[in-house]
Structures are given as structure tokens and as C-alpha cells.
Length: 357
Image (cartoon, rainbow, N blue to C red; front, side, top):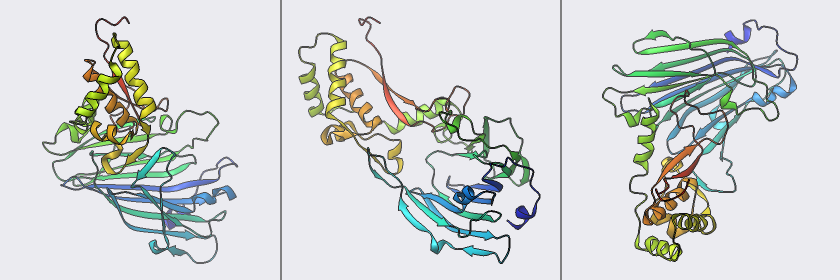
């Protein structure tokens, strides 16, 4: 932080609130597929509105455990001081009105004296157990970035595949045995605007997949097909019908002589009788509940409703398929890497041959 704070800065727009003078992310992949990470940030505050950067935040879940979390301030005058993790506060992540249960918490560590001219920074260490061996380095922000580094350390024999989005490819510098480091400097800010495209569709980032020797394709997303197989595996057995579901389908499809009418009746049942409520703990953010549970409890999130509808359609002889989408325009495209960048699930229905298109 001292080295970054004493380095000269270029001239910025007078409306710039702060500068991220140093950003460093270190990812270490363990032989068992677990990950250790370190996140370091140092900001120089230029305007009063830059006080918002005098805080460190980290997300905690069943699959991510925080280690050390501490922060510092280098004032323009006077002594430096440290804020330790014992001063951090945990709270539940904000839930929407449709979310019922989530295991995500936010740990916040406030840094006093976030005044104009001061430098504030923090370091966070964490251990993760990812469901898929990948990572994302977002190096562009809403404020200028003077220096950003990403270091990757993997076991011997492991490989990686990196894809650059909204930025030209940058080659890494080997920095040790099976270790690579990327360095980017003087990254311009992206100023928020009304009705601007989604942030992920604009900000420069690098998505990287980690490949273990002899790894199953479903554990590392190298192609869109890999991701589809992973998602298909999560849903295996979830669309099995029960006698109760079969009876309900027979009831609502009774007297409906065409596939279109049967589809409409099933869709209306899903819309009106199955409440949209999300319970997403751990893998529950990606894996649907079983049709049995969704029907019995009469609620579920988007992928749950799609699961039950698919089960009911199958009982009438109509095939359907999960279709995962991102509701923010410009985030995912054919050239973007195969990541878990989807936030909604719908159903694609294969129309029978006797249905007019």
C-alpha cells in the first residue's frame, strides 16, 4: 500500500471520486480441486463521494470460508492504522421478495477516516470449494484502475484455458513452477449512466477454466456442451413423475383434444397453483428440486417450475428441455466463455408433428 500510495498518478477527470491504485487477486488451486484466494485492494480517495470505498466486503456461504480479513488507512498526515477482522460485522445477504432461504452472508469491515487525500485498503483471504473449476478476474471498474494483477498457481500437470471478454488478450508472465501472473495498468473507468448496457457486457474481464489431469469435462467448462452436460447431470432424476402428478395431469388434460390445449392447461396450473419461492442453499442455486417435492409443496423457483412443467408435459407425450438464459442483454453470446452466467430458467417445448407452427 505504501508503494502504491507514493507512486505518481496521472491526471484524472475532476469528477473522479477515487482511484483503485492497486488491485491484486491470487488464486491457488489445490490438488483436490479446492481453491484458496487472496484479494487485495488499495484506493486513493479524491472527492467526498469516494468515501464509499473505505469499506471491505466479502461474501460467505456454505462453500466459501473466510480466513483473514483486515484493512488499513494511510492518512495524508499522522500515523497509519489497522482495522482487524474482529471489528467486522456479518449480515444476511439482501433477499428479494421471492427468495425464502439463502446461505449467503456478507461480512463488512469499515475503514475509518476515508477522507479526501487518504489511501484505504484491505486484504481478504478465503478458502473455496467450487462446484466447477473456474474463476473470473474483473479488472475494470466504475473508477480508474492504476494497476491490476492476477496470479494463478496450480498443481503440477494442471492446465488452464483463459478467455478475454471486452478486452484484448494479455499474455501472462510465468512467475514460478506452474504459476502465471497477468498485469494490466491504467484501465479507464466505466461511468454509470442511465439505461446503460449491463455491467458484465461492458467491463473487461478474464474467465479462466482449470483443467486437472484426466478431469471429466463436466468439471471444467471448456465448451458450451460441457456446461450443458453439467446442468443435465444436476437435473438427473428430478423430473420423475409420481402417481399424484400423473393423476393431476389426467384431470387437467381430460377433454382436451389437442396438444396445444393440454400445454395451455398445464402452463396455467404451473402459473396459478405453483408459487414462485426460491430456496437456494449451496448447489440449490443451480440444481432444481424434484418434481415430487415441487408438486407437494406447491412452490419453487424458475428452474423448479420448469422441472414440474416438463414432467407434466411428458405425461401427455410432449417432450421439453431446460433453457437457461441471462436476462441482462449483452452479457452472454456465442463468443463469451462457457460460464455459469445465467440467472433464469425457462422451458423449450418440442412441438408434436401434428401441431401447426
